[in-house]
Length: 396
Image 1 (cartoon, rainbow, N blue to C red):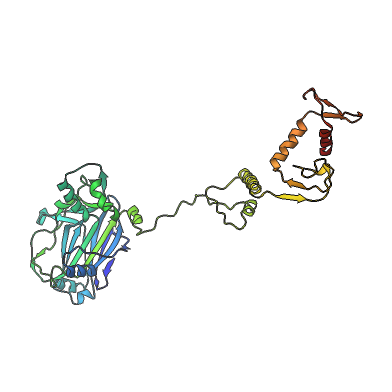
Image 2: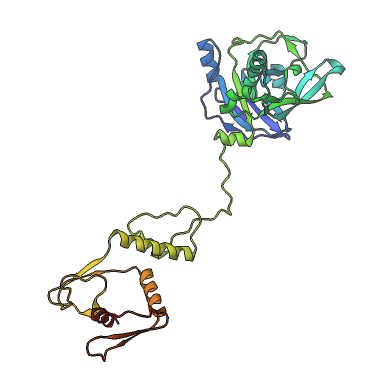
């Protein structure tokens, strides 16, 4: 229920299915388009604005209420003028004498726009209708007129005045012919483009006419403070739920509970990134993928800073791995060995190749030349020098 702090006895609310809609405070500053700066400032101070949710084809009504302290010193009449999408929909007056007979309280519900008099009076109910867009092109005059209409679409405004008694009777208020219809809610995209920031999603159309009683109508009422200075202006901006989320009026729904939660890396991976933050993006790794990643990280670390150990002192042929430096004769006096750590994968590959090779038989009984017998899969000829035999024996 919208209640202005300056006039707590006046209130207005929108009903759907005979129940008040949920109202959301308008976070934006209220602005008036009046050309006079004094009147513009007044309208901005007298306006209270709320957002409500609109659903396609949902009917709605507007409830107006009076009560203390406003009724304690009200004028002869309190007049409510209802405009929907910028079109006058209804005018309702609360008579001071009648309000006092009901304990200082008064209520009225406007369900639509009336037309006709007496037994010919009909009422067409309010109904929300979704706005749609198309790619049609229209001339400049049509575009201008449609843009002026769309500027006030999505707004229900109620202005309240304290007026004189006036005169009973007159034409039935409301202009049903100016409302949009179900046939023209489909508008060109070029016309809707300026209103994207406002997230306009619905308009109001009128339902089928039904016979009703017109009720009291008053004319020639005069606003005590002037037509430009209403007591209160109630403004309701209706949007779809999606549009309200887009405008950040209501929060978006949480993500589905079935979304997988990223898992922490294994301890071995965490140790590889010690001192650094690690937050995997995407689905968790499988055990095989983690193992493969660990090997790649280890190999990369060795590539960046190879562990090189320089061992001093005498060398022995049986302990040599990699390159030999110093004394080429292998005497082992005063030489230094540089030991390079091999990649585990490469080491295993060499061992498999060595196990699968054909056996080599070395005959050490000869006096001068070492005879070498090579298996059928070997080269079939050619000798091996004493130097090569020495290295082979040392390695095995």
